[in-house]
Image 1 (tube, rainbow, N blue to C red):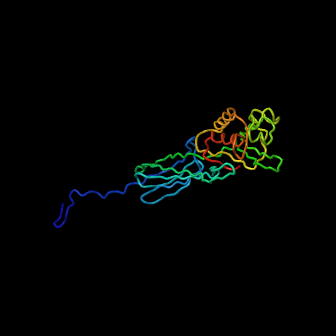
Image 2 (spheres, rainbow, N blue to C red):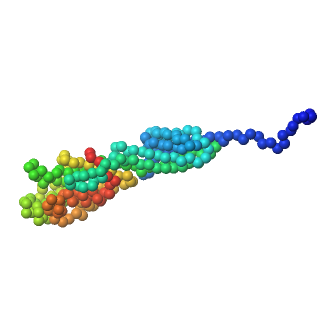
Image 3 (tube, rainbow, N blue to C red):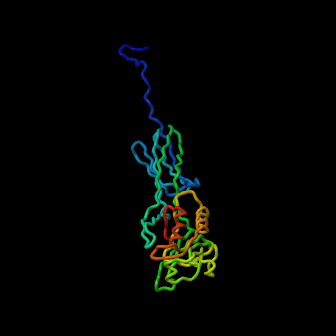
Length: 262
């Protein structure tokens, strides 16, 4: 019974409970393979704060508890082994160095008391180690006066452009028929192996790519280019059709992101 002087609350609401937090995990994977990427920097934005984590060997960054609602996540990864250069001028070589860094943004809605795994795909930079572009530069006073540029695919397979016979100054300037790998004039050359195959060179570099093509895909492009190449062999201060122009053609066919000295 209500006593005189007592008041009664009519229709009053119970105090509202704070929303329960949820949990967020981020998985960073390669775009081509779906494999987890270790070492990616992950930043999740939560109520004006930033939560920073690094992905583990399986590509997971456990962000932990976050408020329920929408969250933006940024990912950054540096593929240090694939830092590369762009070729501005081939001869004499002038390059521009670049970092193999990829960034991406994703978002996730985390429910109260729930757990969400957000998957973010990254393109992956990689060095194509089986393919090596080799360059012996001109050395007028050395054993190999003309130098040579050639492209190796590994396993004894390589391609370069040669004169079809020995040359003098007149032939060099005005040209003679050319021959892939110097066949048959140079006995050490074969249809699939340059006479300099496996030799050391003044410059050696491999392509860096950031797409889903395989090593074999790139090798096939070079093979097709080499076997379809034709014309004379001549050289006059980079003019003409010679081992430099041949190698530059094989480089353009690959359409690499860049290159790395090896």
